[in-house]
Image (tube, rainbow over all chains, first blue to last red):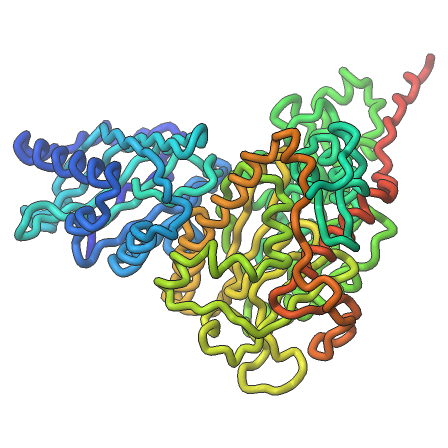
Length: 199
Length: 426
């Protein structure tokens, strides 16, 4: 059982708050040392991906890792809870450790033409908000962060990817591990010839 | 080797393709004027995929679609009929429906409030009484209906040409593919689409899916080696007179079982093949694992890809998710197979603008002269058939393309402006 990922748009989105509801509930951040550790983990992970050190990146993943990137759609307000796809919908990623290993093994081959010559990618990770999900003990964190990635490939093949990530990190023997990630890109139509990079 | 040079940027389609020689001048991927002709002929005279009935099960259910560059709403109206009309308000041309899908009894324009019902009829015009003095003939200003909407096996198509053959006839031997795709499913359900954009002419993708079983051994080597897939070497490539092309193999090929659907793996009856890939002309493609595609022409060098998966609604959540995961892993915006296709298409386009490049012929000669007519395994099919490594599907695609490019545009729906009746009592 894992922590509930952040919902993208709640049933409350775009609606005035009902009068009986109380004021906004503020998050209870983790302590500064933990916040620092979590941020450094995310920055290091982004560095490994930028440098295409995929074998090293896999070391940061928990055995039970779930990596998703649902598709987003344009829905009317009344249908907003369906604006991001669930597990029964078609998305851009729905991976476990086995398929992440497969995907990274492909890119490590010289005949993976889409990545040879390789693209140049820079990821910026910001807005890191970490909390402890209830009933998960001291070693599990729910982390929301924003990722901005710029990818340049060959001469002028350039793409921007922006979204937020709902992660679950847990502490393993060697340090933090990524146990869950759901990437919510801000695009309904991916404005790139592929989104086959990890964000 | 060069072909006869086109006279300018608007060279005629017939000067760019030589089907006897099996060559194609790449101007067909580069010319803006040719795209305008395609939109006026190819995309108006062909049956275009609009969606699947599983997404339109209740009255009011709607989805949006694109026919060439014409945006349409597809909906099941109250009378149970599936209809399609331009997603464009008749008043000032605003997009009427801006949601991808949903359920609605009315489509109301967000500009001035003209409102249309599920049959496309204009049912409300704000200030009709004072602004228009009640004189606007509402029945003349409904949403423009797609001339014909027909379904085959739940697949909904639309066509602007009154004189086009009925959908079932148009699909030709490809009907078998849609039969095989749905026969194994109790309750076919279309899931998706996911969408992405690619620098590349739409035909690069459409013709490849229609024809090309030659490229995987090179283009997809990184994926096939890891997936443990050996590309089939025995099978057939078919090309229909309506421009459809597809590749079938014998399903006994154990290397490919997971990627193909067949009528009945234990049967020796005709129809006992499996699909690798295929295209219903012009831009609706399918793969053997029931991934469906439309390649939308956004501009001459820009396509938008819509991708779905056909599943069985009665599958368990886990089965369903496995089908999605397989499609995502292989053929999708992040697919380990697809990624190398998009590399090829976009780089073909990227180097296509050169003057000399544009006048250099491309080769579609594989299997030229070694095809036969008809296929005993595809009843009623009278098109051309060749070995699995044969450009017959691509040649059929471009033969039909040329026929339509050279032919007339259809008569479009009656959209002549209706006059305003004179005010009464004057």
